[in-house]
Length: 112
Ligand SMILES: [Ca+2]
Image (tube, rainbow, N blue to C red; front, top):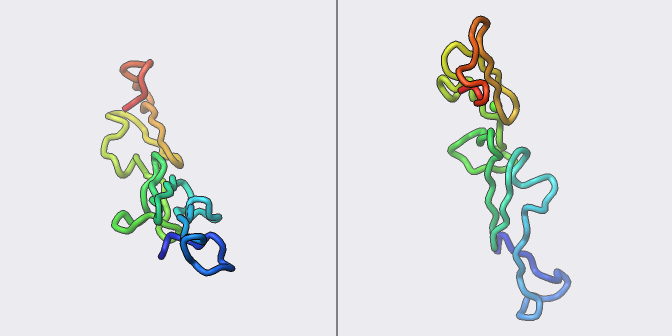
């Protein structure tokens, strides 16, 4: 079955030489592509994107052919930095700055 490998490929498959789960997460390059988490499951695996990343095509499963890309929070999340601010997208994150002439409301909190 897909997702399983025989223990010893030189011997016939039987109860002494069983089909074992493949840990696809150990493959190189990663089956999930960069900036992702891989979770091995029995007979399968699951891919998810790291925080700040999303699937290039959100309607398809994450894979080496549909990798995780940076979320441009400045574009994708309206008003992510709040009013009178400048948003700077970074890979995996973003930064907010106050516009010239403005100060953050509470300097102990991130701008949002
Ligand atoms: Ca980003």
